[in-house]
Image (cartoon, rainbow, N blue to C red; front, side, top):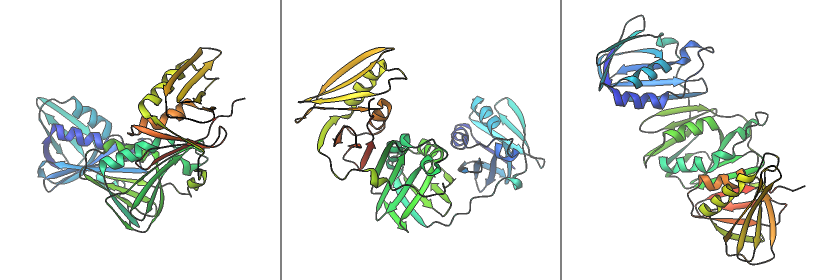
Length: 364
C-alpha cells in the first residue's frame, strides 16, 4: 500500500477516530487504526469493540491495500509534522514508512485481516435530522444520565421514535431531562432504544453545521452516518423506565425566569456551600425570588431577582448542581418554573420541547 495525503486533512481524520481506541491488553489490534487505500481515498477505522468509527479523505493512491498502524503513535507523529504532505509506504510485513518533509519514520503495524469486522446492522427504524439540532438535543439531556451500573438502562440516553417525532430522555432517578423535536424524516417502526452515554458524547463532539445526520437503529446496534463519518455503537439491553410517570399532570404555580440570570444567582450563592450543606433555598415572595445558601463551615449568601410572582410566599430547596445543570445546557432565554409544593417534583421547561423534572430536597 502506498499513498500520499494532505497533512491537515489527515490530522482532522485522525482526530475523529482517535478517541475510539481500545486497550492493547485486551486485543493488540484494537489499539491500532485500520487504514484502507483505494479509489483515490483512504479510510481510517478504529474500534474498542463497543464503538466503531470510520472516516475517509481524499488521497493520491499509488498502490491500493490495507493495514493497521498503532493509533496513538500515529496520531502523535502526524500532529508533530509541519510539511503539507505526508507519504505512506507499507510493505508486506505491515511496516509503515512515513515521510513528511525531511522527516523519515518507521512504525510497526499489524495485518488488517485480523481487525474486527464491520458491524452487521439491519435497521428497524431510521431518523434523519440536522447535525446542529441533534447536537443541541444531546446537550440538553446528557448531564442527567445515571452512573449506577446496577441500573444499566439509566447509564444511557433513551432514543424514542414516534410519529414524526424524536424524544431523548436521561435520568438518574433524582432528576429527568427530556428533549422533543420534529426531525427531517422518520421511517420504519416506532419504538425505543437506549444509547450509551459514551457514544452520544462522542457523536456530539463530531457534529457541526446544518448537514443531515442519519441515525439507524437495529436490534442491538445503532449507526450514525454523516458526510464525514460512520459511527456504530452497541445498544444497552433492558427496558427504560416509564419517565412520563414522574411528570406531574398539573401545577399550582408557574413563574417565568430569565435563564442566564437565574443560573448566575445559583452559581454565585453556591460558592458559600460546603460538602455537608449542599442545597440552596429558593424563596418566592411578591415579585421577588431570593436564592439563599448557608454553611457553618464557610458562611452564607443571598441574592435576589425580580420576577412576576403573586400568591402565597413559599420556600423550596434543591441540590444546586442539579438545579443549574439544565440552565447551563439549553439555549432558551427563559424557562417556566412550575411547582405544586416544596415536597413534590418541580418542572422547568422552555418553549422548544425541553422539560426538566427535579425532586426538591427535604431539609432536616
